[in-house]
Length: 342
Image (cartoon, rainbow, N blue to C red; front, side):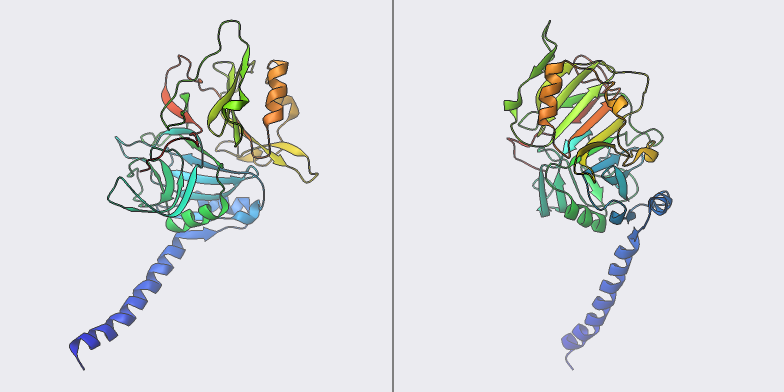
């Protein structure tokens, strides 16, 4: 028998065995859970590259992804309830992943980098036009990327399958600080070219501004700053409204509520169970709590008319960026205008 033929016959079963072992290794990195308690127990024990997936806990409703850079973890919430948790690897020093509130701008299951030697970036979900994205990548247990958020391959594929364009992604915390999560930060929007843009403050004597024509369509995110006593409304990442508001500042925590359709077919504001607020997950937001946000009646009426299921309200102590100080925090990357991905 020719040596080359023998080598091929020997190599085939070895290759098949390696493929099976690799598949088993990939499967072992991901686990399923059947209840919130089981998911929480498993999530607390994740090692680099591991993840847990439990979509049946909340089978329907608005989706939100929360990335905690301090913990190097990502959590997926549906209808306010956590349904999945994964380890991640974010940007290394000099290439830090920006924090903020983003929308998924573009999806590409077979993306390759235009910046880093055509490197594969499977299941890419773009957050900014200048190169920040969620995608499958290396997970050494510490920040190692060039700014993107690396996910395990299996988790990235599953996440890609349940997200739509416009889904909200919140990135919080600091990769260099593995104790705290989040904190006072400067909220700053992105312009249509994907660059940082300074929000235009209200003029003297102006109580609010409403310009819906700036972005006629797309997902709506509302950011209410207790520090500034002000609110900004963005649609598709573009500012369409800004108002002076009156907010109780006695609660230092960050809260996120999302507009969902209830079993009665009517819209309901529900809490997203972010870290520290797990008990609130999926609960209807107290009407009295929402009524603590006081704003001009005309602005309120315009805002209500723009809200649709999936809209998100972020209540924060952070500044909106009109002369404040702190770490730049992007608010919803714009979906328009630019090209040139990482």
